[in-house]
Length: 252
Length: 151
Image (cartoon, rainbow over all chains, first blue to last red; front, side):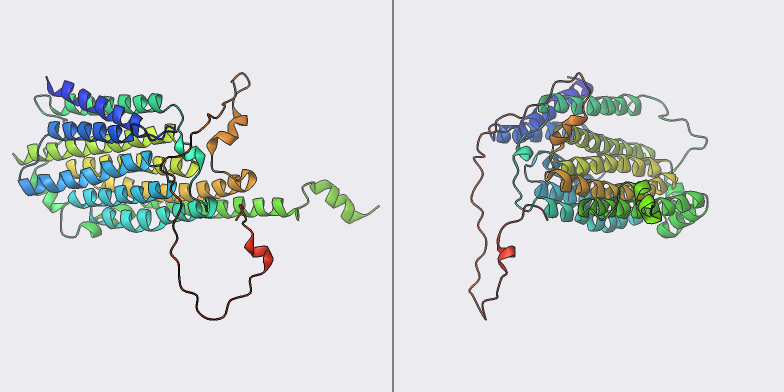
């Protein structure tokens, strides 16, 4: 079989596994789904090109494996608290992948901001909203087969595009100048990587940084307003009809 | 051969990004818990971030990494507003199930009827740790002893 057919077989196996692993009201077939998805993932890993060096290759495969297995477990586990914790595993794997690419700041920011703040907020709301933990709607899904096939189509399209473009003979992408490894060592993999990233961030992207800060402030105010409004509505303290309240104040 | 090595790295990272995006999409379409749906959206964002970092290294350009920083910013904003909305919605109906909002469907759509669920075979009784009593027994007001489904 050609490489593309192997990729397609791996993706179809993985999608079948995902379909069986998704909550469907019964626990039957979950184990078979896990086995199928693992076989699909192994087939996928056997087809991707190898990095030079056993250590680099195995480190990449372990990090990518943690990421993808955590993602599949997030989607398929019944308990939403466990789903959040598996997603934390995915985030840690992603942070490792960033570090493997030399993106030191992003790796730390992912752990601190994503896993440390956003994920904990999700867990907080989960525990606030579902103190009992187990709910019937977590044991069923919408159209498990249809959504698994949608995922297979998306992943298949992306993967086969990458395979067909990057394995084509000749220069992959025409660049204005040929990038060699010494360029990377001097720029994106330099020792002062974080300083260079900050230079980029506060140099050409300064307006975007300001816009991002404004967005954060707006989101903060918006979240506070949404919750406060709901509280006022529930307590009934707010007079919803503004005009009548004005009339009452003026008197007859 | 170093250039080839970089292409292999880019290739593999794009595969990981595609897998993360696809799995997140499956979860967003299939799951019914609103918070799990938001987790899946964050996972799709992570897939895009992985691809961006790979392109950033390949082109020796910090633009991709700067974009990932903005993705993290927007994800934080999204999580704040989304969780505020989710708590509001939860207070109204007392459930995180997205199916209770099916009244928002189009006029000619048939209503979704929830299937009868068999009892969860893995539903074991929860075992909590027990502690030996010590000190004076506290006085609990009777209003706090009964269970409140709303927090």
